[in-house]
Image 1: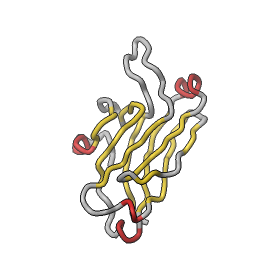
Image 2: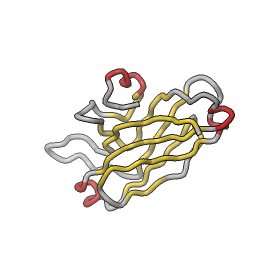
Image 3: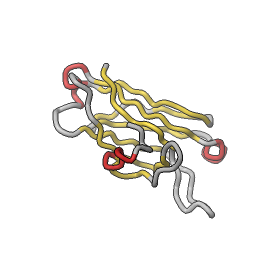
Length: 134
């Protein structure tokens, strides 16, 4: 799902700031509802989070660790040490899919603190989030 698509708004459950240009900023934690691919309960799936980290964030924080979970099943974290566009892509085991809604949750170890004129703590600039068949 492209987070900037107005139809995706009801899937962005919490931790997202209003949409901008091609994506939206997150806070320290954020959660989405996703459609599981066919056969995910038998084969698992791949969770993909595409995002950007601006130079100012890395200059201030030095590193940002991203942890993900699907329906409570924790995935391997990723650590990012440079500015740029990235993809957090992790295999999700079939045990994470039990029918019904599928939720993905993300947690950052740190965010850029709010400071004037910006009054929000900023995490990642997310463009897309989704599950793909394995």
